[in-house]
Length: 275
Image (cartoon, rainbow, N blue to C red):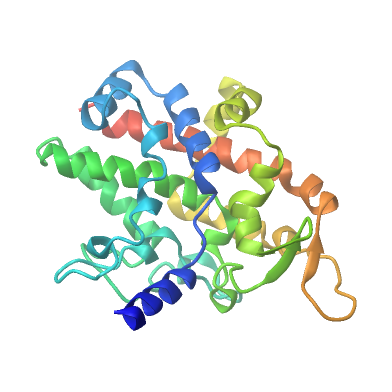
C-alpha cells in the first residue's frame, strides 16, 4: 500500500502544471460572462447553476487526479493531454495539428484543439443529455483559458516549459508555472479586481480579438515564444533568476491573453447556447 501511494504521489508530482491557476481561469470565465448575451447566460446557468461560470473554471484541473479522468477506470480516457498541444519548434502549426499530445484518445480527442472542437459539438447539440452539455460547458470554460496560455501550445522537448527550472523572486519554480500563476499572483489582485482592470475593450477591439479560428489563436502562442523564453543569462550554476524585470515585461501580455480568451469564449458560448 505504501509503495502504491508513493507511486501515485510521484506520478502526480510529474504532471504538467495547470494553466493560469485558479485566478487566471476565473478571470477568463468572468470576462466571458460579462460579454455573453442574456439568453446565453440563462442557458449556461440552467446547466451549471446560478453562480455562473467562475466557480466551474477550475473544474477541469481539479479532476486531474481523479481515476475516472486519467484512464484509471476501465473504458475511461486519460484527459490530461486535452489541456495542451505539444509542437516541435521547427514545425509550422498546420502541420502539427494531427500530432497527438498524449496516449489516450476518446471521441477522436488527442490534444487541446481536438478537445475544444469536441466539446463545442456537445454543448451546441440541444438533443444531448443535460449532464453531457453541462460537463462540456465546464471543459470549454477551462480549455479556452488553456489555449491562450502560450506554454500550453508549447515545445514538446521541454513539456511546455515544465522542465525549465527558474528562480521566481527567489523561490524555486519552472517557466510554465511562472506563466500559469507566478505573474498573475504577483499582482496580489483577486480575479474580480483583475477583471475590473482589464475588461474595457471597445466594440472594435472586441470584433478584432474575436476574428480567426482555433488554429490561428493557437498560433498566437507560438508567436510569443521568443519573448516567453527570453530568460536572462545564467552565471555559474543554477537556474535563471526571474524577478521584476521579467514580471514587468510580461504582465501586460498575460492580461491581454486573459482578456482575449474571455472575449473569444463569450462569442462561442453566445452561438452554442442560443439554441
